[in-house]
Length: 344
Image (cartoon, rainbow, N blue to C red):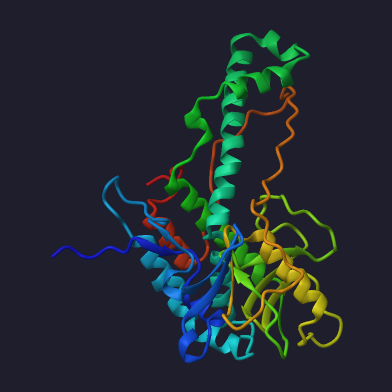
Protein backbone atom coordinates (compact mmCIF):
# COMPACT_ATOMS: atom_id res chain seq x y z
CA UNK A 1 0.00 0.00 0.00
CA UNK A 2 1.46 3.42 -0.95
CA UNK A 3 2.34 5.78 1.89
CA UNK A 4 -0.41 8.31 2.59
CA UNK A 5 0.52 11.88 1.75
CA UNK A 6 -1.00 14.81 3.62
CA UNK A 7 -2.32 17.53 1.33
CA UNK A 8 -3.74 19.76 4.08
CA UNK A 9 -0.80 21.93 5.07
CA UNK A 10 -0.97 24.17 8.14
CA UNK A 11 0.59 27.58 7.57
CA UNK A 12 0.25 28.19 11.32
CA UNK A 13 0.79 25.01 13.36
CA UNK A 14 -1.78 23.60 15.78
CA UNK A 15 0.96 23.77 18.42
CA UNK A 16 0.69 27.57 18.31
CA UNK A 17 -3.06 27.84 17.74
CA UNK A 18 -3.87 25.85 20.90
CA UNK A 19 -2.97 28.96 22.87
CA UNK A 20 -6.10 30.62 21.41
CA UNK A 21 -8.56 27.71 21.52
CA UNK A 22 -11.46 27.45 23.90
CA UNK A 23 -10.95 25.47 27.09
CA UNK A 24 -14.42 24.26 28.08
CA UNK A 25 -16.01 21.12 26.67
CA UNK A 26 -18.04 22.63 23.81
CA UNK A 27 -15.26 25.05 22.89
CA UNK A 28 -12.29 22.72 23.26
CA UNK A 29 -9.99 22.80 20.20
CA UNK A 30 -12.27 25.51 18.69
CA UNK A 31 -11.26 28.97 17.47
CA UNK A 32 -13.50 31.87 16.50
CA UNK A 33 -12.45 33.09 13.05
CA UNK A 34 -13.35 36.46 11.52
CA UNK A 35 -12.95 36.69 7.73
CA UNK A 36 -12.34 39.74 5.58
CA UNK A 37 -15.92 39.62 4.32
CA UNK A 38 -17.09 40.32 7.88
CA UNK A 39 -18.40 36.83 8.64
CA UNK A 40 -17.40 34.82 11.69
CA UNK A 41 -17.38 31.08 12.26
CA UNK A 42 -16.42 28.56 14.88
CA UNK A 43 -13.43 26.78 13.38
CA UNK A 44 -11.88 23.49 14.58
CA UNK A 45 -8.16 23.80 15.09
CA UNK A 46 -7.49 21.05 12.55
CA UNK A 47 -9.10 23.19 9.81
CA UNK A 48 -7.62 26.55 10.80
CA UNK A 49 -4.98 28.10 8.50
CA UNK A 50 -5.00 25.05 6.22
CA UNK A 51 -3.96 25.41 2.57
CA UNK A 52 -4.05 22.47 0.17
CA UNK A 53 -0.58 21.50 -1.14
CA UNK A 54 0.88 24.81 0.08
CA UNK A 55 4.37 23.38 0.68
CA UNK A 56 4.17 20.81 -2.11
CA UNK A 57 7.38 20.59 -4.15
CA UNK A 58 6.65 17.31 -5.93
CA UNK A 59 6.18 16.53 -9.59
CA UNK A 60 2.97 17.65 -11.26
CA UNK A 61 0.24 15.19 -10.27
CA UNK A 62 2.42 13.63 -7.57
CA UNK A 63 1.53 15.15 -4.15
CA UNK A 64 4.49 15.69 -1.86
CA UNK A 65 4.39 16.53 1.85
CA UNK A 66 8.10 16.24 2.64
CA UNK A 67 8.38 19.91 3.62
CA UNK A 68 5.17 19.78 5.67
CA UNK A 69 6.62 16.77 7.50
CA UNK A 70 9.89 18.67 7.96
CA UNK A 71 8.02 21.50 9.69
CA UNK A 72 6.41 19.03 12.08
CA UNK A 73 9.61 17.07 12.74
CA UNK A 74 12.30 19.78 12.82
CA UNK A 75 10.51 23.00 13.85
CA UNK A 76 7.33 22.21 15.78
CA UNK A 77 8.22 19.05 17.71
CA UNK A 78 11.45 20.48 19.26
CA UNK A 79 9.67 23.62 20.47
CA UNK A 80 6.60 21.92 21.99
CA UNK A 81 7.72 22.05 25.64
CA UNK A 82 9.07 25.58 25.21
CA UNK A 83 5.73 26.82 23.85
CA UNK A 84 3.79 25.19 26.67
CA UNK A 85 6.10 26.84 29.21
CA UNK A 86 5.76 30.16 27.38
CA UNK A 87 1.96 29.95 27.64
CA UNK A 88 2.42 29.40 31.38
CA UNK A 89 4.61 32.50 31.68
CA UNK A 90 8.14 31.05 31.50
CA UNK A 91 10.50 32.70 28.99
CA UNK A 92 13.44 30.46 28.08
CA UNK A 93 16.83 31.92 29.06
CA UNK A 94 19.60 32.46 26.50
CA UNK A 95 20.85 29.09 25.31
CA UNK A 96 19.59 26.07 23.35
CA UNK A 97 15.90 26.44 24.30
CA UNK A 98 15.81 30.10 23.24
CA UNK A 99 17.58 29.19 20.00
CA UNK A 100 14.89 26.57 19.36
CA UNK A 101 12.18 29.16 19.97
CA UNK A 102 14.00 31.65 17.71
CA UNK A 103 13.93 29.09 14.89
CA UNK A 104 10.19 28.63 15.41
CA UNK A 105 9.49 32.39 15.44
CA UNK A 106 11.66 33.00 12.37
CA UNK A 107 10.03 30.21 10.35
CA UNK A 108 6.57 31.35 11.41
CA UNK A 109 7.37 34.80 10.06
CA UNK A 110 8.05 33.40 6.58
CA UNK A 111 5.77 30.35 6.13
CA UNK A 112 2.42 32.14 5.78
CA UNK A 113 0.12 32.80 2.84
CA UNK A 114 0.64 36.54 3.35
CA UNK A 115 4.41 36.21 2.82
CA UNK A 116 3.97 33.89 -0.19
CA UNK A 117 1.63 36.39 -1.85
CA UNK A 118 4.01 39.25 -1.06
CA UNK A 119 6.85 37.33 -2.73
CA UNK A 120 4.63 36.80 -5.78
CA UNK A 121 3.81 40.51 -5.82
CA UNK A 122 7.49 41.45 -5.55
CA UNK A 123 8.40 38.99 -8.30
CA UNK A 124 5.76 40.47 -10.59
CA UNK A 125 7.75 43.73 -10.39
CA UNK A 126 11.23 42.24 -10.16
CA UNK A 127 10.92 39.93 -13.18
CA UNK A 128 10.29 42.74 -15.69
CA UNK A 129 13.08 44.75 -14.03
CA UNK A 130 15.56 41.92 -14.59
CA UNK A 131 14.30 41.46 -18.16
CA UNK A 132 14.66 45.17 -18.95
CA UNK A 133 18.13 45.35 -17.39
CA UNK A 134 19.32 42.36 -19.43
CA UNK A 135 17.93 43.69 -22.70
CA UNK A 136 19.30 47.18 -22.10
CA UNK A 137 22.74 45.83 -21.19
CA UNK A 138 22.87 43.78 -24.39
CA UNK A 139 21.78 46.83 -26.40
CA UNK A 140 24.68 48.82 -24.92
CA UNK A 141 27.11 45.98 -25.65
CA UNK A 142 25.92 45.92 -29.27
CA UNK A 143 26.02 49.72 -29.62
CA UNK A 144 27.97 51.64 -26.92
CA UNK A 145 26.38 54.88 -28.14
CA UNK A 146 23.15 53.79 -26.40
CA UNK A 147 24.85 54.50 -23.05
CA UNK A 148 25.02 58.22 -23.85
CA UNK A 149 21.30 58.58 -24.55
CA UNK A 150 19.35 60.76 -22.17
CA UNK A 151 16.22 58.62 -22.18
CA UNK A 152 17.62 55.41 -20.63
CA UNK A 153 14.96 55.40 -17.90
CA UNK A 154 12.16 55.72 -20.46
CA UNK A 155 13.72 52.96 -22.56
CA UNK A 156 14.00 50.80 -19.45
CA UNK A 157 10.32 51.19 -18.54
CA UNK A 158 9.24 50.56 -22.13
CA UNK A 159 11.24 47.32 -22.26
CA UNK A 160 9.95 46.25 -18.83
CA UNK A 161 6.35 46.74 -19.98
CA UNK A 162 7.02 44.22 -22.79
CA UNK A 163 8.45 41.53 -20.51
CA UNK A 164 7.10 38.02 -21.17
CA UNK A 165 4.42 36.85 -18.76
CA UNK A 166 6.73 34.09 -17.53
CA UNK A 167 9.11 36.77 -16.19
CA UNK A 168 6.37 38.02 -13.85
CA UNK A 169 6.00 34.68 -12.07
CA UNK A 170 8.22 32.42 -10.00
CA UNK A 171 7.94 28.74 -9.16
CA UNK A 172 7.05 27.36 -5.74
CA UNK A 173 10.45 25.72 -5.02
CA UNK A 174 12.21 29.07 -5.62
CA UNK A 175 9.88 30.84 -3.19
CA UNK A 176 10.32 28.07 -0.62
CA UNK A 177 14.11 28.35 -0.88
CA UNK A 178 13.79 32.10 -0.28
CA UNK A 179 11.58 31.30 2.72
CA UNK A 180 14.27 29.04 4.21
CA UNK A 181 17.08 31.56 3.65
CA UNK A 182 15.03 34.35 5.20
CA UNK A 183 14.23 32.21 8.25
CA UNK A 184 17.94 31.51 8.72
CA UNK A 185 18.83 35.21 8.42
CA UNK A 186 16.04 36.32 10.78
CA UNK A 187 16.84 33.70 13.43
CA UNK A 188 20.37 35.08 13.84
CA UNK A 189 18.99 38.61 14.18
CA UNK A 190 16.45 37.52 16.81
CA UNK A 191 19.11 35.87 18.97
CA UNK A 192 21.01 39.18 19.14
CA UNK A 193 17.94 41.05 20.43
CA UNK A 194 16.29 41.41 23.84
CA UNK A 195 13.45 39.01 24.73
CA UNK A 196 10.45 39.97 26.88
CA UNK A 197 7.27 38.18 27.99
CA UNK A 198 4.47 40.42 29.22
CA UNK A 199 1.08 39.42 30.62
CA UNK A 200 -2.40 40.79 31.21
CA UNK A 201 -4.97 39.52 33.72
CA UNK A 202 -7.60 39.55 30.96
CA UNK A 203 -7.81 38.08 27.42
CA UNK A 204 -7.01 41.07 25.19
CA UNK A 205 -4.82 39.81 22.31
CA UNK A 206 -6.00 38.32 19.04
CA UNK A 207 -3.98 36.37 16.51
CA UNK A 208 -4.31 35.51 12.83
CA UNK A 209 -3.11 33.40 9.91
CA UNK A 210 0.10 35.51 10.09
CA UNK A 211 0.68 35.69 13.85
CA UNK A 212 4.19 37.20 14.05
CA UNK A 213 4.31 40.94 13.38
CA UNK A 214 6.97 43.65 13.30
CA UNK A 215 6.54 47.17 14.65
CA UNK A 216 9.04 50.01 14.52
CA UNK A 217 10.82 50.50 17.83
CA UNK A 218 11.34 54.18 16.97
CA UNK A 219 7.70 55.08 16.28
CA UNK A 220 7.94 55.25 12.48
CA UNK A 221 5.00 53.90 10.51
CA UNK A 222 5.49 51.97 7.26
CA UNK A 223 2.80 49.41 6.52
CA UNK A 224 3.63 48.65 2.89
CA UNK A 225 7.25 47.48 2.98
CA UNK A 226 7.94 43.92 1.80
CA UNK A 227 10.94 43.64 4.18
CA UNK A 228 10.14 41.01 6.84
CA UNK A 229 12.33 42.44 9.59
CA UNK A 230 13.39 46.03 8.89
CA UNK A 231 16.15 47.63 10.91
CA UNK A 232 15.19 48.83 14.43
CA UNK A 233 11.90 46.93 14.42
CA UNK A 234 10.46 44.86 17.24
CA UNK A 235 8.98 41.40 16.70
CA UNK A 236 5.73 40.54 18.48
CA UNK A 237 4.04 37.15 18.75
CA UNK A 238 0.90 36.79 20.87
CA UNK A 239 1.29 33.52 22.76
CA UNK A 240 -2.17 33.48 24.34
CA UNK A 241 -4.87 36.16 24.57
CA UNK A 242 -3.13 37.36 27.74
CA UNK A 243 0.59 36.80 27.01
CA UNK A 244 2.84 38.53 24.47
CA UNK A 245 6.34 37.60 23.36
CA UNK A 246 8.34 40.67 22.31
CA UNK A 247 11.81 40.57 20.75
CA UNK A 248 13.28 44.05 20.56
CA UNK A 249 16.55 45.68 19.46
CA UNK A 250 16.15 48.27 22.26
CA UNK A 251 17.47 47.24 25.66
CA UNK A 252 14.87 47.98 28.38
CA UNK A 253 15.79 50.53 31.01
CA UNK A 254 15.91 48.88 34.40
CA UNK A 255 14.12 45.59 35.02
CA UNK A 256 12.42 43.99 31.98
CA UNK A 257 8.70 44.84 31.92
CA UNK A 258 6.28 42.03 32.74
CA UNK A 259 2.92 43.83 32.41
CA UNK A 260 1.14 43.97 29.06
CA UNK A 261 -0.08 47.55 28.78
CA UNK A 262 -3.20 48.82 27.03
CA UNK A 263 -1.05 50.81 24.60
CA UNK A 264 1.02 47.77 23.67
CA UNK A 265 -2.09 45.63 23.26
CA UNK A 266 -3.60 48.18 20.87
CA UNK A 267 -0.36 48.46 18.89
CA UNK A 268 0.03 44.70 18.48
CA UNK A 269 -3.63 43.98 17.71
CA UNK A 270 -3.63 46.60 14.96
CA UNK A 271 -0.41 45.12 13.56
CA UNK A 272 -2.03 41.66 13.56
CA UNK A 273 -4.93 43.08 11.54
CA UNK A 274 -2.58 44.71 9.01
CA UNK A 275 -0.46 41.58 8.68
CA UNK A 276 -3.14 38.91 8.31
CA UNK A 277 -4.09 37.33 5.01
CA UNK A 278 -7.73 36.37 5.50
CA UNK A 279 -8.70 35.52 9.09
CA UNK A 280 -8.34 36.86 12.60
CA UNK A 281 -8.53 34.27 15.39
CA UNK A 282 -9.50 34.35 19.05
CA UNK A 283 -11.11 32.08 21.68
CA UNK A 284 -14.89 31.59 21.30
CA UNK A 285 -15.61 33.34 24.61
CA UNK A 286 -13.48 36.42 23.89
CA UNK A 287 -15.30 39.46 22.46
CA UNK A 288 -13.82 41.04 19.34
CA UNK A 289 -11.91 44.24 20.28
CA UNK A 290 -14.16 47.20 19.59
CA UNK A 291 -11.38 49.34 18.11
CA UNK A 292 -10.42 46.84 15.38
CA UNK A 293 -11.68 46.70 11.80
CA UNK A 294 -10.56 44.02 9.34
CA UNK A 295 -10.61 45.63 5.86
CA UNK A 296 -12.10 43.71 2.97
CA UNK A 297 -8.86 44.09 1.00
CA UNK A 298 -5.28 43.67 2.20
CA UNK A 299 -2.92 46.62 1.61
CA UNK A 300 -0.57 46.18 -1.34
CA UNK A 301 3.16 46.88 -1.30
CA UNK A 302 4.53 50.11 -2.74
CA UNK A 303 5.28 50.31 -6.44
CA UNK A 304 9.07 50.49 -6.94
CA UNK A 305 10.53 53.77 -8.23
CA UNK A 306 13.26 53.08 -10.78
CA UNK A 307 15.85 55.44 -12.21
CA UNK A 308 18.36 54.10 -14.75
CA UNK A 309 21.83 55.36 -15.55
CA UNK A 310 24.84 53.85 -17.27
CA UNK A 311 27.14 51.79 -15.08
CA UNK A 312 30.73 53.05 -15.21
CA UNK A 313 32.07 50.62 -12.60
CA UNK A 314 33.01 46.96 -12.65
CA UNK A 315 30.69 44.40 -14.26
CA UNK A 316 28.22 42.72 -11.87
CA UNK A 317 29.34 39.59 -10.04
CA UNK A 318 27.66 36.23 -10.57
CA UNK A 319 24.64 35.27 -8.49
CA UNK A 320 25.51 33.59 -5.19
CA UNK A 321 23.62 32.74 -2.02
CA UNK A 322 24.83 33.00 1.59
CA UNK A 323 25.23 29.69 3.41
CA UNK A 324 22.37 28.55 5.64
CA UNK A 325 23.75 28.34 9.20
CA UNK A 326 20.96 26.57 11.09
CA UNK A 327 21.22 22.77 10.66
CA UNK A 328 17.47 22.18 10.56
CA UNK A 329 16.96 24.90 7.97
CA UNK A 330 19.85 23.50 5.93
CA UNK A 331 17.96 20.18 5.87
CA UNK A 332 14.92 21.99 4.47
CA UNK A 333 17.07 23.53 1.75
CA UNK A 334 18.29 20.04 0.85
CA UNK A 335 14.68 18.83 0.60
CA UNK A 336 14.13 21.65 -1.89
CA UNK A 337 17.12 20.54 -3.96
CA UNK A 338 19.59 23.16 -2.72
CA UNK A 339 20.33 26.50 -4.32
CA UNK A 340 20.54 26.38 -8.14
CA UNK A 341 23.78 28.41 -8.06
CA UNK A 342 25.45 26.10 -5.52
CA UNK A 343 27.80 23.60 -7.18
CA UNK A 344 26.95 19.96 -6.54
